[in-house]
Length: 329
Image 1 (cartoon, one colour):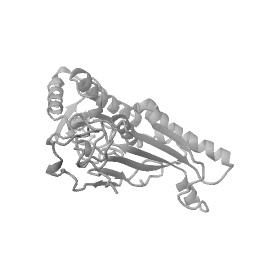
Image 2 (cartoon, rainbow, N blue to C red):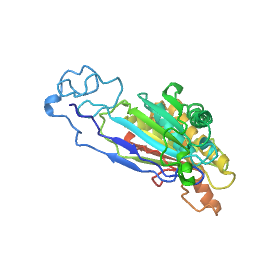
Image 3 (cartoon, rainbow, N blue to C red):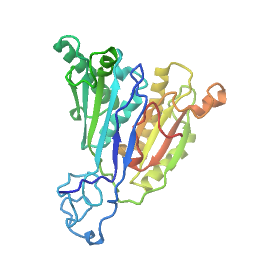
Image 4 (cartoon, helix red, strand yellow):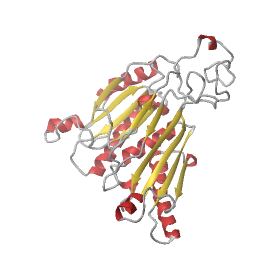
């Protein structure tokens, strides 16, 4: 039996949620195997599927084009599953859920051999046709967000209404019925191989760009920082840029979330259009007021919090953020 390659496998476990339906906790596990370097006898052998591993040692011949593989030629699986509770409001409209959905959609865009399945679920009360329609609407709402807002390819995002067919727990209690109102999202496939999968790992780099009050544009003084980012990305083609936009706490939360998105997207566009960085290596997410680096009760603190933070890291350093990044910036 062929061994399945798993240099990196990200497993996102069942997520607990708050009363408003927002994801509250993220269980992340990173699994690394010892399959990091092929035997010397594999070097300089024929490579029919052009995955970088010689045919003699390729345990998974016929690998699709541009799929990231381990040292024995087996695709590295991309597997993410999360469950978000539904409590009467649209899941995709909740600002606490949007950073998670943004990252999910960006991962689909960046990995062409991946797809998303969205399942809407209800409890067992009411006519079956009514339950099916409600669960379908919930799933379609998230699909529309991923496709229209984030730009995920529609043909790789499926939305299915399951009604009350697959309960998590018994529907005999009010608590059980609440838990069964949910949406389950699964992302499956393979990581896409970047331009230089075999490149030597580069040390991570971090940058912070400050923004004016309610501003999403960049002045010329920031150009030097962007040139430095682009240089680092070009010199280390096996890396990606994790771009996170933030605001202070002044103004409505939803407006701040949108401003933070625009700031992150501005940096991404400049790196892609003016410096020639492949957009597949640029992950831009807005986090609004999350993760402040200073006290928002002072003018200086608010100035520091109006920022875009950029980490240039290896692809496996990317995480699905729940209500902000897991890493302090």
